[in-house]
Length: 169
Image 1 (cartoon, rainbow, N blue to C red):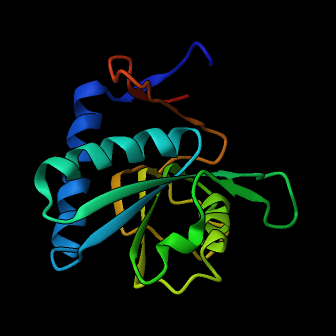
Image 2: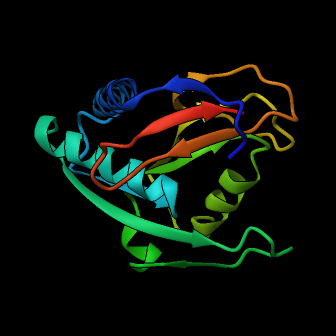
């Protein structure tokens, strides 16, 4: 990480964003019996786990999680999941990633569910950078940053949560 970095969100602010996103997901899905949180590994899965923990405390519906590993270097969709994606059939799926930059990762994430009849698919990112190359938008985001393309957003999410931070560098 470069020496010149600017702290955008600290641990407490990240948790506040996650709490707010969880409440938005709750409001959008009050009548659902189950919601699937699909985290794109590695960072998206950690954020998804945090959202799931908040939803388990506040939501009347069951909340399950799926981890998605994408090969972003491949020119075709290559992915693996820790659970069969067909278990998402006729359910609400919330796809979670850390940063939306070009939109390619979320577009690949959509591809995971193309052959599965979903009730609805929603997207969550902690940071939306507004540099989309793909026609992708988010339903819930923690913060929207207007940055120059050369800048990089570093998201540090740990399992304990104590070292969470978002930096611009």
